[in-house]
Amino acid sequence: MSYELVEILRGAGHPRLLVVGDLFLDRYTWADAERISQEAPVMLLREDHREVRLGGAANVANMLRGLEADVVLAGVVGDDEDGRELRHQLVRAGIGAELVVTDETRPTTVKTRLMGRAQHRHPHQVLRIDRESRDPLPGRIATELIDALTSVISSEGSRQRIDAVLVSDYAKGVCTPDLLSAVISAGREAGIPVIVDPASGADYSQYRGATAITPNRTETSRATGRRIVTIADGLAAAVQLQGDLDLDTAFVTLDSDGIV
Image 1 (cartoon, rainbow, N blue to C red):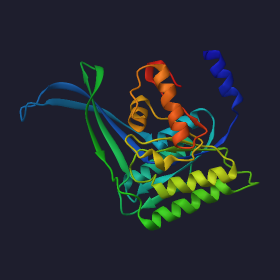
Image 2 (tube, helix red, strand yellow):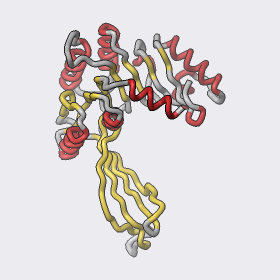
Image 3 (tube, rainbow, N blue to C red):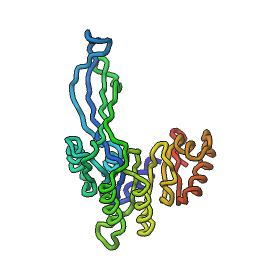
Image 4 (tube, rainbow, N blue to C red):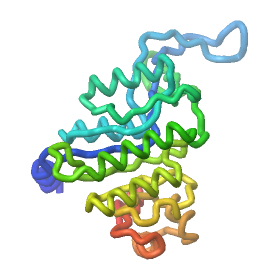
């Protein structure tokens, strides 16, 4: 199977992909646990280094770049230092950021993780702090982003034509019903597949008409009202999603049981 996968990836070439969704900046602080603090009954950690990574839809784009795809990313950052750092990381990764919009009214989504070790080994996440806004995009920003997306998806005969759209929804306000409807409709009209990784707990009706969605076992169970224990359960739930949402395909991920 590994050989077949390698051959599939080699045959994929360098597709031009548009990734749409919520952009995160992941910050990590790595430290060693030395003792209990004298100020409070908590671990005292000695920091040794920090790390910055692309997260959310930006991480999806980064992984696609690792597969040698040509990637354009669309989303929103705040007018802050973290937003500038996220843009810098996109440039370093070779990801097109011309559709990344700045919204002065919200912070860039940042997830800060404190990673502790015991005796320089066994790294463990001690704490995570999230800074984010979950509010839907304000009207002006939403309109700007929707107009840019539909223009890119609909451009026919261009050498920059998109081969597929991937929507990575984390329910942080970018993937509004209006934006999803516009992207899905534009994809259908242009004959470009739109594949959605849905947000946990989302109203799946907003993904109606997409080419495909990729929920996991828990998300699918919640969306269909089915208890998914076996692979057959997963297949029945996928068929239900396919019919209910007018999808070409529903891919349900079943952790150790694979995908149906």
